[in-house]
Amino acid sequence: MEKIAREAGVAKLTLYRHFETKEALFEDVVRRAQLSVRERLGAMVDRGLPLETVLREIVEKLYDGYTHPDYLAVMRLVVAEAQRFPKLGRAMLDDSSEAAGPLVEYLQQLKDAGQIDIDSPRDAAIQITGLASGGGRYVLTPPSRRAASRQHAVETVVRLFTRAWQRKKAARRP
Image (cartoon, rainbow, N blue to C red; front, side, top):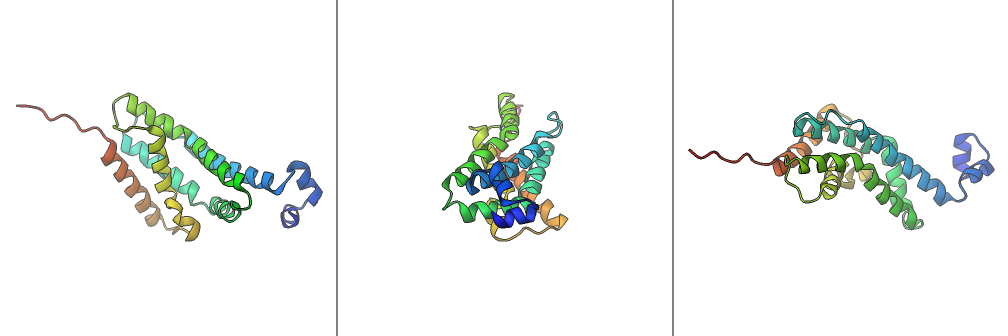
């Protein structure tokens, strides 16, 4: 807490006025990181566009959010401190589920319209976010910041899901 106070240019007592414990401070940091991801998703593209186009933009936003150095620093903190602060890990999982809300809603709309074939929009959103976040590997090894690497990562996720979910048009009989 001393180091955080020093970095923030405030007294340690000031931190404790806002956050009663270190765990409360960590939880707030985690929530803010997840909020940044949700805000990216909240500004999704026109949902009237083809699935592949919308999904590409969603995955790009997720990838950019989950590979941002600040987000990765928070993830590393959560991994390092989850043993000492179990509520911290739970808060991260709960908040990540909440952050995926706009994606779940979008997938539910597509399912209801018969445009995609999925069982659970929530499970599908978790799968997309898991792959867009690098499945945890970016916490261990920072992702490449090259545009070609980003594009490759996004395109592989988009292809996987569009091929798996899109309803096939019924074959016409002669």
